[in-house]
Length: 433
Image 1 (cartoon, helix red, strand yellow):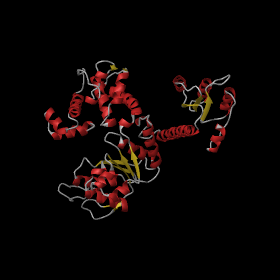
Image 2 (cartoon, rainbow, N blue to C red):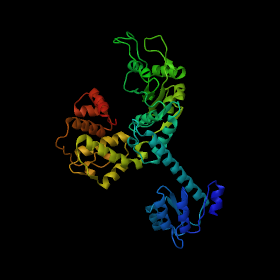
Image 3 (tube, rainbow, N blue to C red):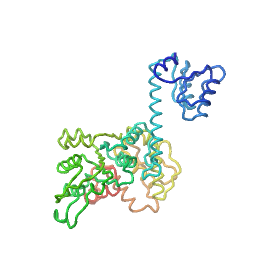
Image 4 (cartoon, rainbow, N blue to C red):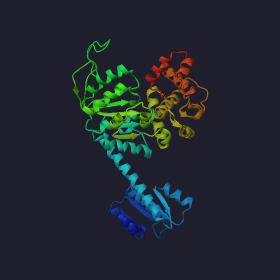
């Protein structure tokens, strides 16, 4: 029955009447998936599972059993089974199971190809740390779209890693080795943003003492990443649309068109359709920018990524601040996985820096975490010896912002500094607010 069903679904199928014959076939050929009974005379399903994994660790094994107890499932999964299915076999359930395994194998295969392509390039696979299927899909789509000239819009909350994905696309594209220029549209007032993007001629405005090459000129033959494009002012949006349509622009105060070959990748932390509906963004420009859209899921939707990211940030903080953390108590991971991470990966990075700096023992404990009301209440803070003043300032500002739910005004009042100083320090320390 299974043979006929699977062949009808288009799968090439090989049969074995017992575990010993199956093992011979596994030695002679390469299979993606093994469907094995649990109870068999001679070599049983668990023994075949182990033997198959010894021959090929990447083969998927599904155990079929009429003895569908929890103990059976747990023992099979611990031994390396991809899944198990109870008899009598529901063919629709089996088909969904095989499709899921096939999809996962595709993701693994494409990730290996991406990692091979990335070796020796500026951005390495180790910098893009993920274990979740959601991020695997984003990485794979980035790899596919990189080969084209299409404009890409990356959508995701602040702190999810939009610029990192943009650099991945650039590094996997034919433009690798050419410049990638980054402009944060939220960091500059309207007149300076126009000058930064398009350049200006000498005397174009008060203070324009010399000709200035804009980001488009600097990114010629390469990639221009426009971060927070959603809040670009209307005049900049109009000029961007013209560049996308004509592939040329004029400097501020200039009258000579300049041809340019630039691939544009943009990013926004808001839903672009909402921006259009609120008349904050031009729909015709949005069409041009989102030929391909990549959505980076927030960290709260990527629980599988929290532990590897945590370990990475702890190691990085230890190296940067000369601290030593031997291990992390399991309760810490549980707290981190419960926390909603409004500041996403950037907030996790800052939280781990704080924990490493403030820890008084080589084992990280829940009391070392300072996550506000949504996480674990931190214990009494003890400032470690030789803690840099800069690190103290960073943690004071971060914790004040956390206490006041991101209010820069309240943080500035509490710390006794100006609002402008708080805003400057947030940018300087890359804080998740």
